[in-house]
Image 1 (cartoon, rainbow, N blue to C red):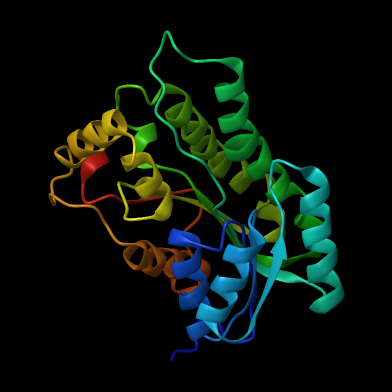
Image 2 (image 1 turned 120 degrees about the horizontal axis):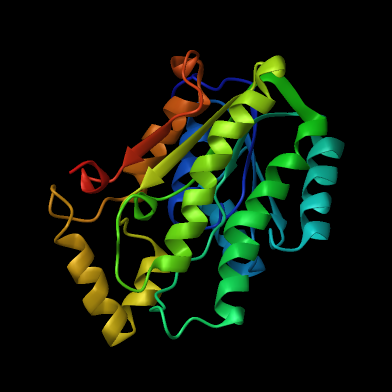
Length: 249
């Protein structure tokens, strides 16, 4: 148990599994009260049980703006403000150029880009000056990966948001940083691996990671904790790659 986030109020979208859940656990262990969201109520209940204390779940989909409004109305009613936002909710899918449909494009961009943008914008009215916003991007934005063009482009947009919002919010002393994981052991990756062709692509992806393995969600959560806490008080506008070196070589 630590106190790096003692008394802080945090919101984590997509907090019911993977990196979001690992981050919620880290935040609570460091003294924060955390609101988590997820699309599936049963997974949300399971995550709340796993975290154990100082947590509230709000079911919702970030691509639905009414769900985002309901989230922040709940946070405002319960705690009155936000100190930390980890805009984490996202989806991943392999689709090669030539097979991309408008449905595939809209799904990726509605959640990863539009959903993330409004997750941040709608938080601002109850966000504490001097707070920290962390955006979940991806090392995929740096590399040319087969069949990953729409996903990679959506994550490149997030890197751009971190830069522009750093300037937009500097007068409020709100720090905005992106974090780019490489391949991480998460339920989303496990679902992809059930498809034989996707599993081959994932295995090829691991061969491009200098450390030779997938990361685990807590390895990412530790980096997010750094960006959320005062330990990173002079850090803003960056993209912290937690990727086993994949985007660096």
